[in-house]
Length: 635
Image 1: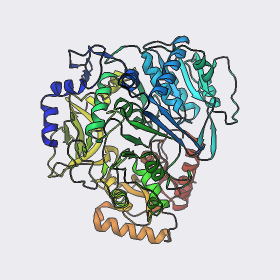
Image 2: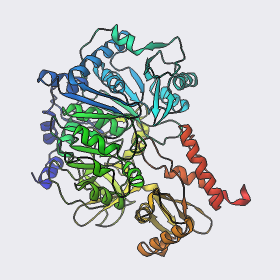
Image 3: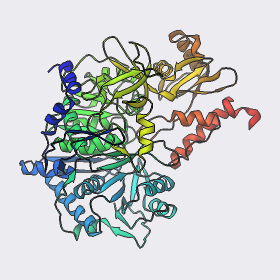
Image 4: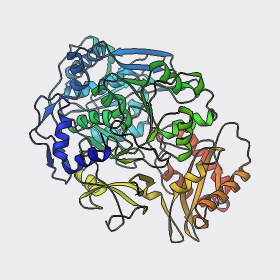
């Protein structure tokens, strides 16, 4: 089919379009009211429909005779453990854990926190909550106690489901002491903590609220799925980089299921029975949508990977998994590819594996620089597709939709609007921008199914953050522009636009130039305070392994390169070499944090010990180079 026809249909007749997509699911009560405006100005999809997400992900496939198909390939190079989990085995685990949760008093509408590493029990926990209509909130495994405590107080869980420990390459991270400390810090006192013991020799402090995971499952009776309203919250997911009260994105059930099922086919080109791999974490939106719910809804085999793109054991890990499990479509963040490229710039390790099964490589999570996309394309020899979406949207907003019509890839562009998203570029006054003119990326209401339902317990924040800036539109918070062919380019968060002596400049554009240097593995460019010009750009770069160039020579080359490709107006005059850049667990570089450190402004307390070490390294470089507020006279 043609993209233009398909897309226009979704915008011109959203009710008809999404009703047809909803028919690909099995409903307890098929909706008669397809779209309803919510009181806060957002949208409620399929409001009078009823269904259950766990049933759609598991039971329906058993009823169709696919119980023996592998649902999950679990591959943990950090523990040398592998497992093939069929749909029948998945049902047994989920229904018994759901029975255990029910015995502990959990029921539809209650909340539960899942604080686990990348192990099958994390997926079982998510699905068991969905099975009962319990609203889960997955918190990144290993987050520091104060981060966990904030989320406990916000979502007020009846239980926390955790594990004895996680493994970071070769380091054991004990989880239970973190949970105990977080409960001590939180005002809300969680009733029960369910602990899965990985039996890796980690001491598990005993508390009165503890429940052993295996005992609970082994002594529980299986229970059936609970039918819920389409608008019933499936989960709360807190956005990264929050300060103070976190922002809990609320996702519905029916709209989300409908959108994910359609996206697997149309965006990613995945058919039922295919092997699909999103190399992410279940604690991030990609993990929710494309490790767990999307693939299982679509009867795919999903891969649960406990490891890193490098050092587990080396930069060939991704290629080994693709080859071993015959992955058809893979999705990861550009930062993972840059890490691999840094360790193996010539791609020698990639050539060791048969990757003929891989048809498409998708990238998202942060803006993909042209150099990274081209390197991946060259080494894999297949379409490499950058696409764009957010925690708030839950599924892609811009993409080259390979299941509809694969079009030419334009490096730097995230593609075209995905079905249901009426994407517009607007100026400060709410006028539509001309072709090539940068503005605010916004989406005309109603948003399609699957997007955020609300902000947990804070509708005012939902309206103020997303609907108020441009009435009748969802404001994404990102800047971008559209070219003459309709391709959309995302230039980064609008607060990444800096004002240098009255000139509004995109740090993302400068970052693109810096990243293209052959010696640089990854980089960040952001604005810091300047007494003379208001702001000035500062670049931080991590070098590729084995690079032999002095910091001074590299800085001079980059300064000339930015001046040549952007102009003297960019006022780019300083590049610092660092060992590592601070990132969220999803791989996004914390540019605002780097800027705030340079300007001596408040910034969030680091989540892990490793984060603290990275920040200390950056501070040391700032002091050495006399950056911003770290001028020698202030030390």
